[in-house]
Length: 357
Image (cartoon, rainbow, N blue to C red; front, side, top):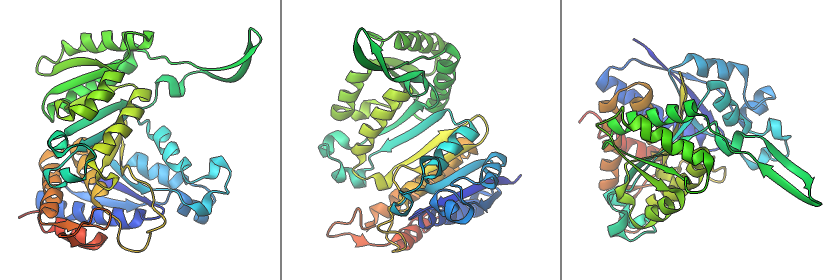
């Protein structure tokens, strides 16, 4: 049965890094006979230049009809003058809404071969392998808000946070299922000593945990979790949390790896999900062939795991990336004396060499 993948390169280095990921997926398809079929569509500034919109209807339709979306990156200085609703970044926001993407996944793994790049001491960073499951469409970012009002003679502004039980149940069940693909531990993060929404969150997670006796579940306040990520990150497997807390914690955790060029992400929907590197479009190096493709290739591994349920194929991609790094291949963002400097194509070929061995 054919699995349809919509590839959206976007702007800047987007084409270079998505081309690399597609090359890896094609090699994986040869080995595992998944039946992948690729369609390329425009979004971002590139789409605006062609069609006058950052997100053409044709792109949305293709994304909705496919089994998954592989996304590059959008943005660039040449589009900064555009009105907010025409800016390249509206493409990713529009796709999130159109696809109903409700959970963001941010894995952070400190490979042994890259532990020296972490800002933490090597003995603390080594072995870190966690997944942050962030609720994406609820909470304070989407609650009622007031930019300015007078109250008791002074100006104030406010934002309203709210969560419903079904919203917390959905994200919790996803986290539990994700943990079963990993090490069967979930840490729920909240601020239930202060916030009513967090108390509802904790009650709901605690109740649902009874349905997953094979998963070890614990709870941390968000401030403690932020500290624990810095002093003992290896204790974590899956972290599940709200939109606001997840936004902050995922950015903190991203620093642990030492390079955003290695970090993939996924935004999961009810039907179609979207996979992309966490880094930007890097227009300053676009077209030079030196962009690190690893984050996009690892995003493709997530696509295999979470959209296609091809765990063995996903493992093969991740192992190939690590093997290429062990051999000493480094793109310029990671290069240090004693390693072999390669560009985008060179790193891609080094990874391909380890698939199907």
